[in-house]
Image 1 (cartoon, rainbow, N blue to C red):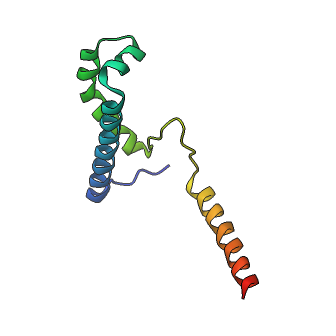
Image 2: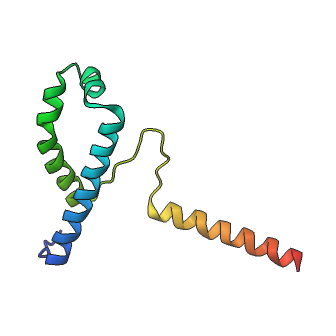
Length: 101
């Protein structure tokens, strides 16, 4: 595996994605509340508050590794699967439209 230099654009993209992931975590934490999250983890709410800095760095790392966040009830597919589904849907709709003409 050859290591190519990381461009400034890649660094900025990773920063933006990491910031978006962190914003998603904070939004979800606000919905769940620090107290409830702390209860799930059997720690104090202040522990959750102090962990936010570590979470921000973890989000940057996830962005650098190409990971995304998804809720537990989400269905996640890779790009190739998504393209296949879209292609099949397009062919299906095209055939239906031709049948109506």
